[in-house]
Length: 268
Image 1: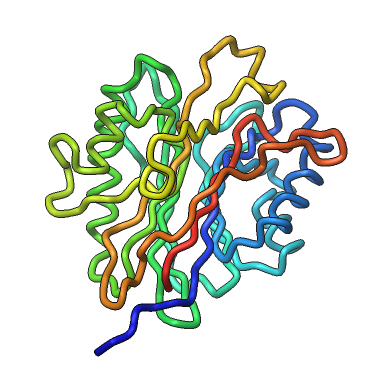
Image 2: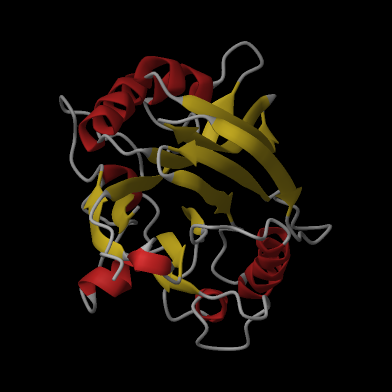
């Protein structure tokens, strides 16, 4: 009889808020938080690149990690993209653009990294969907594009991990598409919501008015950042064990980002 896997994989997702607010001071707080969390794989959104410096490259260098980065939107000649950082080599990577309407084009993309971990390769996806409340119809089409991209990376021997800022509440149609609670765009591709899987009815807000950067938006507290995992495989590979909010307090008086991060542990 095969024993259940006991070793763990630690995965984090976090929106870093581009170069908004006191971004140079925030950089140190972001790095300190990442060091404290000590995740094996880190999915990042709103990562800046000014042409001379890339924040994903900078963080990866400070952590001693590998990284891949893909640009999305551009503001004032400074890119805002997605990145995957990994303790272990990223042996393959790819990206895809996501649906956008001509008059509401936010240049959303998804990035894929195949991580060569010590106990087998891990398929990881990171994305950031349209942000406005009334863009659910756009986000639903972006999920369809995203699922097509994920399915194109089959087969895998470890359940896929999907991370990002989805800008949608758990009860929204787009999130229900991911978790199989409504029409699913990906055939038999369905994910667990890590926070809900572990914490059930707890709020899990990642956009929270306790954060001073959020207060000025005059928006309600929301859970919009997610780690999704495919169904567990042999010996419980990919089975969720823990999920918690991180980056939800200041570092030396500086709040690292307007979003809180999320970290999950899986059997690996």
